[in-house]
Length: 266
Image 1 (cartoon, rainbow, N blue to C red):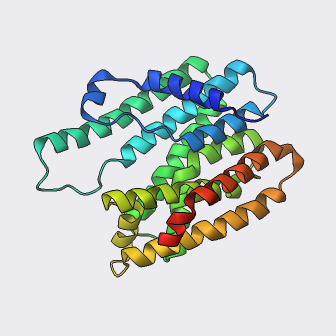
Image 2 (tube, rainbow, N blue to C red):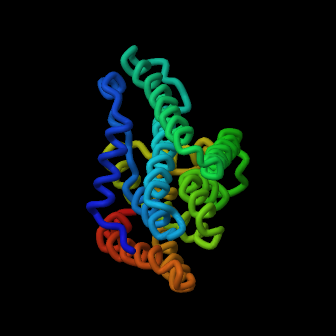
C-alpha cells in the first residue's frame, strides 16, 4: 500500500486545522509539519493490518502532534541576545508557549482514545529526546560521529518509537539514516540563503575550532554515503517491509537528482 499525495495532503490539512491558533499565528510562523516524517508515519501505520481505521487515524494525528510540538521548541534559540527587541523576545516566548500548546493538544487527543500502550510509546520518545538533548547541552559527545548519531536520534525518535511499537526494531537504522539524509540538503540550502545553519552552530559549541566549509563538506559526504548505504539496507529488508522499501528507494532517486547541485557546491 503506497501513501498517496492526496492522503498526505488531507492529513496535513487536518493537522493544520487542529494546530491553528489565531493569536500565536499573529506573532510566529505557522507550525512546521515535516512532510517526509508524515509520509513515513502514514506508511508505517496504514500497513499495520491489525489496526482499525480509527486507530490508524488517531496514531498518525497524535504522533505528528508530538513531532510538531518538539519541532516548535527547537526553533527557540538556546542563547539570549542582549540586543533583541521586545517583539523578538515576545516571539521567542510565544514559540515556547506554542510548543507547550501543541503538546497539550496531543495529551488531550490521547486521553480521548485511551490507548495506554501508544501513550507510553510517545512518552518514551519524548523522554529519550530530552535525554539526548541534555547530552548535547553538556557536550557529552566525544567525536563528530557521536554528534551526528545523537542528532539523528533526536530527529527520528518519535517516528522510531512508533515503528518499534508496530514492527519491532528492524526498521530503526534505515529510517534514522534516511530522515537525516533527507533533511540535510534542505538545511544546507537554507544556510546558503539565510547564513544560519543550526546544526553547525550546535557542533561549533562543542568544537570551537571547526569551520563552516569543513563542516558542510563532511555533511555532504555523509549524505552521499548514506544514500548508498540506505539502498543496500532496504534491499536486505524482509518482503513484509516492501512498502517502506519502495518509499525509500523512490525518494532516494528523487532527491539524488534534485540535490546534486547542493552536493557539488559543498
